[in-house]
Picture 1 (cartoon, rainbow, N blue to C red):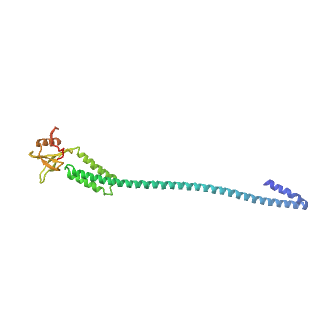
Picture 2 (tube, rainbow, N blue to C red; picture 1 turned 45 degrees about the horizontal axis):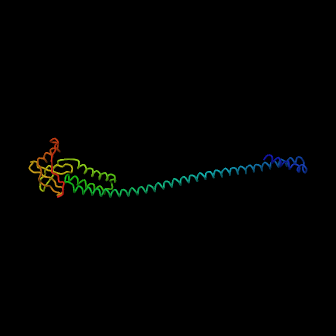
Picture 3 (cartoon, rainbow, N blue to C red; picture 1 turned 90 degrees about the vertical axis):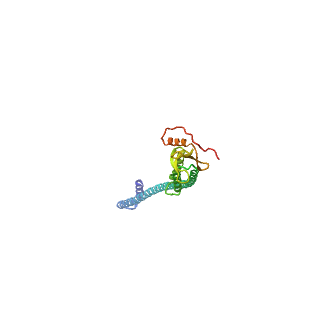
Length: 245
């Protein structure tokens, strides 16, 4: 810019020198220099404004790109969350369907257990039937989780399995009236009784589903004593119904 101003003054000098006095020429030169400086300031200001504009435009472009990236990132996250929610909804629907199937299965298991108890040997009848009723009531109790209800059903089956692996002597009613006698149970092999005076004995017939009199009174009494621990273990022969009538 400085070289341009100097050239301008040189070009103007011959014409000024020919037409004016030295003093006027000096004044004119000063005026031209002042005008040149003012023009230069305006040029510099315009240049600065243009540079500032370019800088602002670059900043706006950069900020606009960052915003666009941020928006795309947020959209990606939103899509991922929507897909995750869709998967969760599908999983919940599958869980609900599975729970319905499990509840139906538990209902059939409870009914099968009830049928088994009704057809089984008649021991611990009150306790076992009460357990069956409780299992049936638990199936409709929404405050209990499906897991807890299923565990109750399984425990009911385990208890019934346990009866087949234990021996006991309990007092039961074996005939109409008030006759109650000690009854020997050996797993699920059978039920035998003998009166305390040793005069009467009998067993439960699972095919006839009733108590029948008869049997070796002494053998049944000895078996009861073995189970209750009153005498050492020994071999005892007891009648067992194994064929159909």
